[in-house]
Image (cartoon, rainbow, N blue to C red; front, side, top):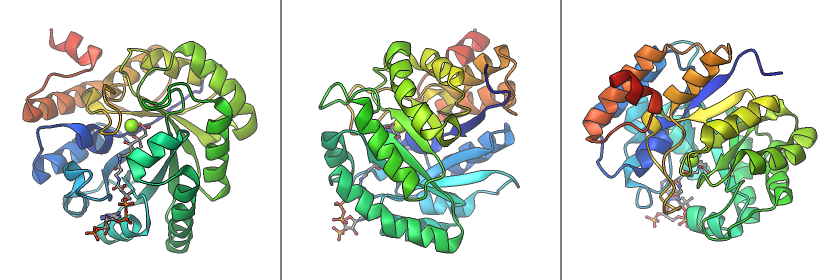
Length: 297
Ligand code: HMG
Ligand code: MG
C-alpha cells in the first residue's frame, strides 16, 4: 500500500542552484524560496554553508536566510559539513541542518575532502551542538546506487553509513542516487536490504534524473512505505563532483505523479509551475520538468 501523504523536501534553491552556471542574484534566490513556500512546500532546503571556494553559488546563503520572509510551519534548511558550517547556519537562522556523507570512499574524498569515517568524526560535534541548540539534523548518503568514480556500490556500504548517521542522531537519512544511474530494479534491491533494518519512516529518497529513472525509482520507494521525497523545482541542478549528473527529479513531476496516486502533498501544482517558470527565465534555461513543458505547450 502507498502512503496516504508524502512530504516533499524541496532542494532546488540548494542542490539545484549549486550547479547552475548562471548565477542568480541574492534577491532572485529569496524570491525563489518564498515562491516555493507560498506554493505549499513545507520544507525548503534554502542554501548551504560550505567552503565558498568550492561552491561559489552558495556563498550568499547567509544573506538569503536573513532576507527571506518566513511562513509558519515551513522548515528552511541548510547543508552543514562541519562546525564552521553549523555556526554560520545558526547565525543565519536556519531552522534545520543536514550533514552529508557518502557510501563511496572516492566520492567522499572528492566531495568533502575526507574519508567516510573522518566525515562521521566531523559530524559528531555538529550533532552535539545541534542537540544543545534544539536543532534537528537530517543526514544524506550519496552514491547509494552508483558512484561516478567507483561504479557499483554495495547495499551493505549504504546500510553501514546510514546506520551510523541514524545512530549519531540524524532523524532520517536521505538516500542519494547522485548520478541517477539507479533503476527500479537496483532501487528495489537496495530497499530490500535497508527498509527492514532501518524502517521506512527513517528514510527519504533523493533521486537525480540523469537516466530518466527517477519517477520510477520513487514509485518503488513508495511501495516500500517511504513517504519523504526530495526534488527540485524545474529539475534544476546537478552535482559539481559528479560529471554528467543532471538535476534532481522535478518537483512538478513528482507532485503530478502523487496526485495521480491520490497521495496528499499540500502543493499547489499550478503555483509551483509558475515559480519554476519564473526561475528558469532568470537562469535563461529551459525547464527539466515534463509536466511544466506539457502545461506550457
Ligand atoms: P577542507 O578543505 O577539508 O576543510 O574542506 P578545512 O577544514 O581543511 O578548511 C579549509 C578551508 O575551508 C579553510 O579556509 C576553512 O576556513 C574553510 P582557509 O583557512 O583556507 O581560508 N572552510 C569553510 N568555509 C566556509 N564554510 C565552511 C567551511 N569549512 C571549511 N563550512 C569542506 C571541507 C567540507 C568544507 C569542503 O570540502 C567543502 O566545502 N566541500 C563542498 C561540498 C559540497 O558542498 N558539495 C555539494 C553538496 S553535497 C551534494 O550535492 C550531494 C547531495 O545532494 C546528495 C546527493 O545528491 O547524493 C546532498
Ligand atoms: Mg543531490
